[in-house]
Image (cartoon, rainbow, N blue to C red; front, side, top):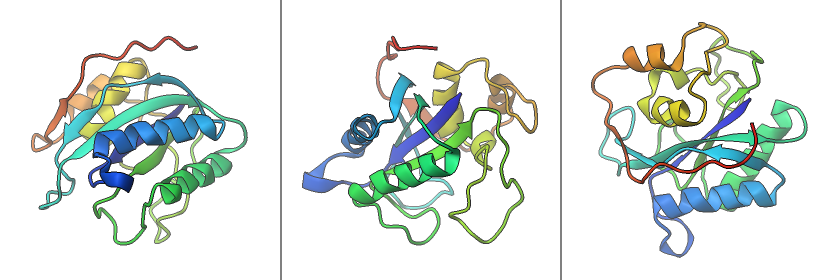
Length: 178
């Protein structure tokens, strides 16, 4: 199972809202050969760590893609660049953010290092983020963390109480595949 987090919190081209940017990113993924098998609802969440940034719109998709995870990560970064994402300081506001959360049960480079572009799987902070876990629970409710072995329910139960994350649309009907 390949899982990608989608999010953003500032306007995009032509004044597109963060939710419109997220929808556009999904369309660009499909155009670029990344098949979306399932998508969560969109969620609104406060910036993390807490700041004066605008709220984010976040969701998670289950996808199918050819090639190794490094190739997929490059494709995701290319889509971000096409949409106007500027990489700078960590946790800065952004038009779009596409995070490769998992690539099957593969485990890569989980030790922290100073290279933010280095691929780490599963994503090193997914278990700490309500804006990832809530949407993830919709499309992969039985998924377990390949390193800790924790279920999504256990990870949600362990979240810090200060995370604001609310669904902003009705449940999505996922009709494709697995």
